[in-house]
Image (cartoon, rainbow, N blue to C red; front, side):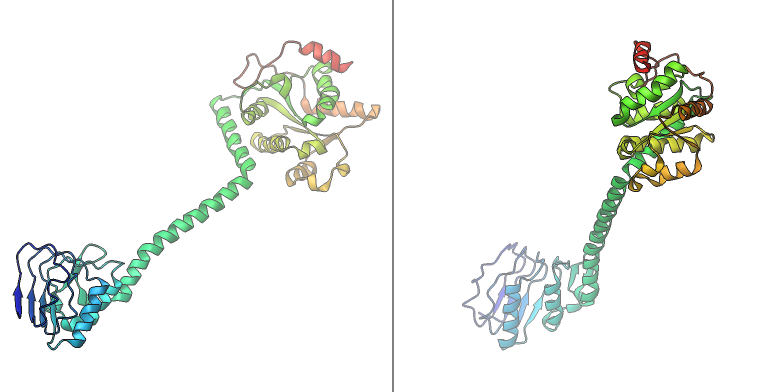
Length: 364
């Protein structure tokens, strides 16, 4: 049997050993079928001159079959030709070896210029026109560029995350400061509810209450905003601090080593400095609980150094004469007591029951 024609029979597959014994077969026509996989044993068909596989559903020729065809080309007594036209051959990023083989064996491909495949972008292209280095670059570019973009975005996100984490207090301060400015702008002509807001370390609380707050509130009748007396429980502390500062005519910072080691106190100091710039007038009073030369250098931040170098500060002393001078300067800085809010705000109480009794105990 030399010529077998099985064309246009709706054949979907052919057994691998179907033609093993047809050693004298010269022409095998399987065109016009629905064959998706070529797995016929070809090595023994030494007389095969033409294999027609056109108009089928082949997407590629697997490596094993390619090797058999290579061997058959070397051993066949005929000049073998293969017709692969009108097959939906695939030329994608997994097809480099197949394309290389097709181009290398172009001499045995019947109607070679008409053998086409589906390219990466979905277009139909003649396999003879494919340039493998360019195709590899297209494939690598399709993988590398998204990977590089993804990697770059990941690195950028990490860098931004690190920056935000390291500057989280500064960013939080800026956001809250803007929030306070917007709130003040919405209220038009802003009226303060307190003569001053007093910021101090919780470790210095007893000292601050006894030596500063009690005298300001009881003796000099100033309405001073402070955490225990005026902060509403349950509110977000940063919002409460911003509200306290924005509602107070003056901001009193009691500077000590404890103050400078406190994250919240540093936060309040940064807010106070921003408020100083926003109001365009002197609204900040610095009280040094300890002499400035006693403060450890590592605790003196650029913000504090700037404030000390550019502002007049009050230094506490146990000497009675110096105390009188201290309070005279404090009164000059605060001005006359004149601010008294009438209604509680979202974050602050205007007054607490029992204030007078507490003040009398502190002043004794």
